[in-house]
Length: 339
Image (cartoon, rainbow, N blue to C red):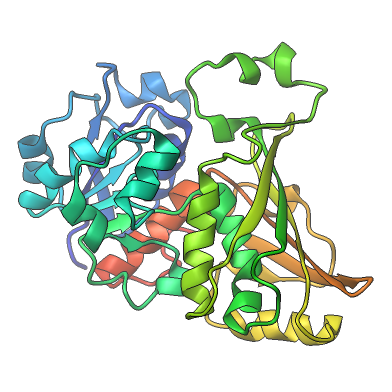
């Protein structure tokens, strides 16, 4: 059996990093050899669930150190932080899977408009591959830089891709009403995620200006294969649970929509995608919690198409799909360590 590949987790203190490390500890072809953080602590002090499972102390980021110990780096950093270090890693031959939004948009001006920060790595932005295997599986194995998709975007894009790819719906009247658990906001304390603020309450946020909007538009327009761009109306909501994304998607069909035919279309479209479950029942976030599955069903109501899509924001929406990408990059089964 071949030696496991050395991997680094850059930005190891957050929730997604914890999930990522837990998955990698089960991976037969990977070994976490470096963990970096601004907090100089043992991993099992930052994440007590890792006690007796890994013996690493977090260290400050150093590109030479990472390149010496690892062939792959998973970046679990805040938005705008990844672009500052990706070039140094790629120059040293380290292949990067970035969990932030820094390389998801292919237009630097669009990135600056939505994130309020000029993009400083034009080459990386041009060469990055969007890491949603269900749509870009053929491009991922040879990539040196993967832009891991967001959690809301994964649920929304997977829910809509068959419809736009087959040109079955109007592209400018799609409505996405989505809900996220509190862990989607990260581990750093914020007032609106404080227990007394969010418990027993549901609220919308970033209405009309959520940063996942241009990402959804861009990838669905690519899936549509030309013609008019896709423009969605996306509204996120915070709900008082730890984890999960649930998206209710409304679309106007261009012809007569038949529910059974749509279910069969989705099954065919995702036939080779092991982590998309097309179901006939109404899914819930508990069904996909702690898994790398996205559960999708379709209904036709009063002539409109309703798509219900849900996943675990920390796994299929972050760490799990990152490992899917890693598996494709090293030639391992796509499902390795994820079942």
